[in-house]
Length: 217
Image: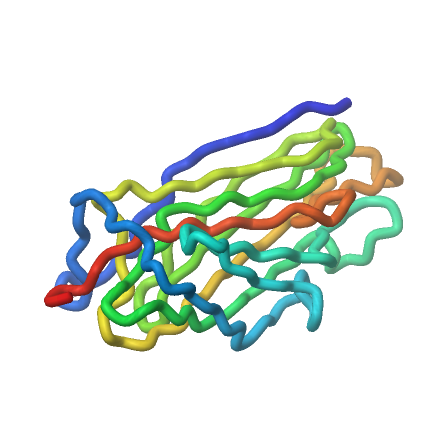
């Protein structure tokens, strides 16, 4: 059984003490800076992203960056090992932006492939945050079996709730993701899985920038 799946949900704002939180603005977004941004990946840790299996790239128009995984799969049932039902990944990166600009993450599009037997389920869970700031409330999405197809979930943050990296301060940006598969009432002999990559390896997770000029620029 094959069926398309697209779900949209609002991401909770970064919860910060009032004294530490940068002011959120509902004003129209500034255009992206003309100079290219660069991203340095500092650390990649987790059972879902062994060394060399995750890559980060920026969009040519500075509107987003993508994360590509090549071996990020959780599975249960059949001959699956006892710890394979859950996989996770933590990526810490340094986003270099042109002087006079700062950014927030306005939303994210998560994509992958799932094959779930009748009675099984798969869950995708994600959060992200600037170093030294509170983590976004993790947002979870669930796929129910029977299912065998690509999946996509899109999370968006309301403009009034965006939290920007403080101007003039170097803060690493951190992404936490998780995949979990539960065999539930499915036949124990059947293997169910959920992956952050597709059958052709072309699927990417996309994080969308919101830009703002720093005061006095």
